[in-house]
Length: 253
Image (cartoon, rainbow, N blue to C red; front, side, top):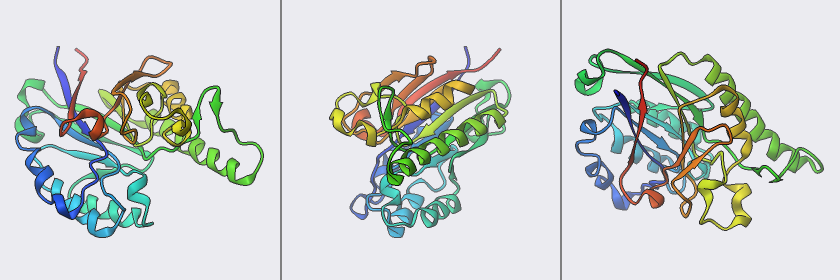
């Protein structure tokens, strides 16, 4: 079976002291993957200088790069400026929307093994928290709690709309926060509500996708599945223990 090969990693937290080092670990990636997805927390403190460093580290790669931001990338309230820097370098940066990539002979690396163009849809964004079924916050009580949960609900609704609109052979959801608790195992249960939300999984299950990738949980577990049976992978760098993971999605026909 012909497969799309998706490289993914999150939580690389680049700073000036590692300039150029991560790029070295990407050498030859085009031989192993058709696309690279970055699951947020690309910087340490969300400064514009760090954002520019990330942009340079991934500029000119021979395969497409799609990214979402993480909570660290929002820390200095410069998330829009950082996203602009990444886009200027050639990345596609998702903000609760989607994009479609053409992977094939006319695409990066001349992947003739695909026997024609394969269209990969990528939908997602940072995501947010709130907890998981049976142990989650709800839109009740103080305005601050209502706003917290409503923010995640609006994100989930945006993902659901984007998934419905995507026209592609296969579709992957890219997030920073987790849609399930299983890939958080290893983290203290007390902080699960700040690591993800079941609302994200509900939105994806309602429409369907082939794979969900997230980061954020440095001490979590790599593999899990939504209640609807969609594969979930925690691609945080500390979890993977390598520059990126490779995840394959079979193509129709």
